[in-house]
Image 1 (cartoon, rainbow over the protein chains, first blue to last red):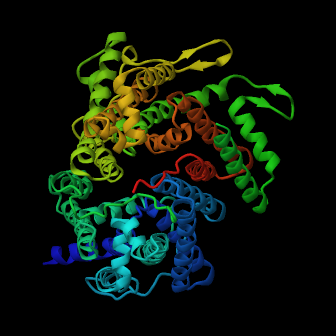
Image 2 (image 1 turned 60 degrees about the vertical axis):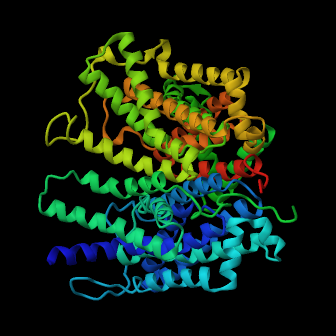
Image 3 (image 1 turned 30 degrees about the horizontal axis):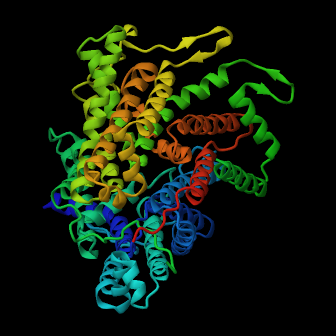
Length: 294
Length: 341
């Protein structure tokens, strides 16, 4: 029983930032944008939340700052990938490098000189076996919002059309580029909260490259979850549960190499890709540019 | 060429403006970059030796080979973000070949490199298969394969192939006779033979792409897959082959990095060459030989940033900012795709 509680607590604590970011990424990918730069967006947000929480003493102001920074970073991504029609994968890779360099430089200049780990105020959390913090509550709300937006609104229908066939979408009187910008905005809010979670909810600190590939894990989870909000959230929780099981295996000294659990989520995602492929589940125009007036 | 040069100039201009705003003395930055990469001290008009140049060439070697690997896939329209993983398995398999099979001498180096290439090819195979026959984006699958490679090799060097049980997670050092040693010339100039292999492979790739029918099909699929299919090219097989070839070259990069520089496989085998290589390949544009100046530029930026951190306390992470800005601007001038819909 203790083990189950422990795994659940770890899955929720580690999985929340993935679930939040995936809620945004799924809407964005449905609109036809593959945001490789999610990793960098989350990293910048984590730094912004850390910095503002440190300066003002308020973690919630930190969360707001993280969302603002995520919107700025995504704005730059959108400027190149949507406005200028540059290749989404190239732009995303560039953004990741830029964010890694910018946060690393700022952290080095402002904080790393003392050599000690700096703690900043974190959002309030309940006590108990399964602690729940303030940011965790947003995860189910955002997943439901993504589901409702995509499948219960006219806007969502248009967004999905922009990701399937932007030309027909435009012919039906919508503006695919505008829809993609709007989806990018929603994804940025989610990525900002996910980044903030890492610094002002989970650790209360910042470290260089602290996202450590979580942005890519989210992209994999969206694939694994077949581009649906609930499926992606489930994939994120499954991945974080694998980490939870790993702690258990370590505690019990089970003769299972920890790297197996580390690699498991990625192998599962690959197996899904090999077994099922994109089929009809993925947006047909994912990562395809669209030029208005053509 | 002119547009890429302009993009590089613009990236440096943006960075200079940012640094000036932050109150960093730009002249000192420029001086330490020149000192750190050329060995020439502008203030004293003095040349301190070949060590900085050799260091840039050393850093450029794995970037050149992995950059070439990514470039080959790009020519057929595929993004191989998995060079990092292919490099790692290539290096580990080369270490295994030297330590367990006892390969030595020139023949041993050739066999270990071929085994490394095979490992890289096999590591790219799932992504190639998914891309060709399952319609999944290779960017996603190669990222997954990178993680699996990192953890799988970590498992091997902290268990089956560990040097000492309970010690550092690393393999033993390969014997001197099995390694591809650097050649030291007069004046302290050091040449890494792997660099020459990289240049040779880039020339071969250029000839294959431009002078042979399969190379033409390769570029045709990259330029316009629908037109290629209409012309009777088996586009699926071509993109499968492109990613496999790319993986093999990344495997060669790993094997040569192990035989020539690291001489053992540890967790820190690659500080992210496979990720930097994407930038190198994109900067090189459509020409396989372009990876040479691109790799040298990336290596010089990293080397210069290290020097600037020591000399004037500028964070060396600034090199990522330069590379990111470069990629964004090159994406704009060169990697703008027309809507294919």
